[in-house]
Image (cartoon, rainbow, N blue to C red; front, side, top):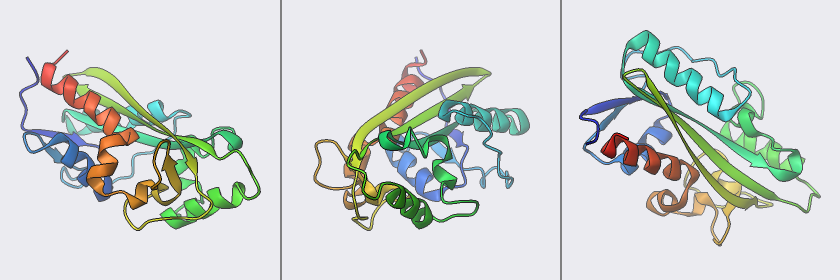
Length: 197
C-alpha cells in the first residue's frame, strides 16, 4: 500500500548527504533538510551507538517540528582501532574538524598497522505518525595508505570497498550509490515507504 506523501524531512544540514540520498529516493518524494524547515540548531549526538544517534535526531525533529522524518548516522569502524572512529566519525579529528582532519587522524593511527580492515555502517531511524523503524547498511573494505580520488566526502578517499580497485572517492556518485552503506540503508527505507509494512 505504501505511504502517500510528497515530502519527508531528512534530519541533516549536510548538503552532500542530502544530494546523495535524494538521488537514491528519486523525485516522487521531495526531501527537506533541517535548513528547509527552519531548524538551525545542531542536534546533540550524545548516544554511544550509531543507531542511538540516528534515533535522537529523528525524535528531535518529530517532537519539535511535527514532521514525518528520518535521520541517519554513519560511522567508519576500523578493526585495528577497536571499532574507532565509530560513533565519533564526524568529529574524530576534534571539534570543528574538517573531513581532511578526520582522514589524517585515521591514517596517522594506522601508520605501520598491517590489518587495515574496516566497515562503513549507516543506520537510519524513520518516524512516521509516531511509528519508529530502523534500517542498517554495512560495507566491508580496507583503509588505503594514502587518500585517492576527488569525489565523495568524509572518509571516502581512504575507503576501498571489498572487491573494488577504486576508493569511494574515485567512484562516480551513481557508482558509489550502487554499493554504499548509505544506499543499502536507504534502499530498505524506500522499500518500506513503498510497501508501508
